[in-house]
Image (tube, rainbow, N blue to C red; front, side, top):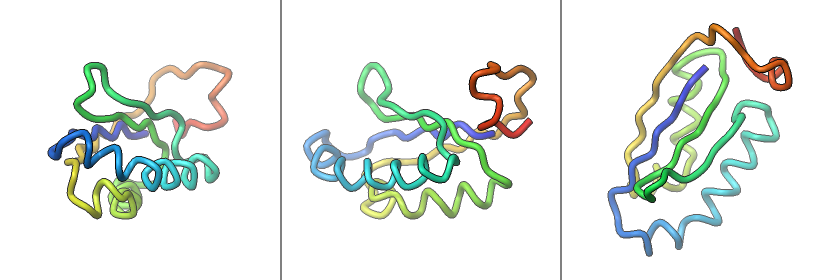
Length: 96
């Protein structure tokens, strides 16, 4: 599993202008059951995506499709982890 941490490096007005395209990107990977959860950080300095994939290289490829990545308005940190425990309600979405 992966935690993808986005940190905004451009003004929020630039981020907001790209948000509709970013949300379409997220929807595409939610539909494929690769993204499990996403949202804005509090305070608003970026976002977080919880994802499952076969490899880190797959996640690295996926994020290159994000408009925030393409337009260089955010940096992306990928943290890979192996779940030790998983809530039974989402277990089918999680690679253990």
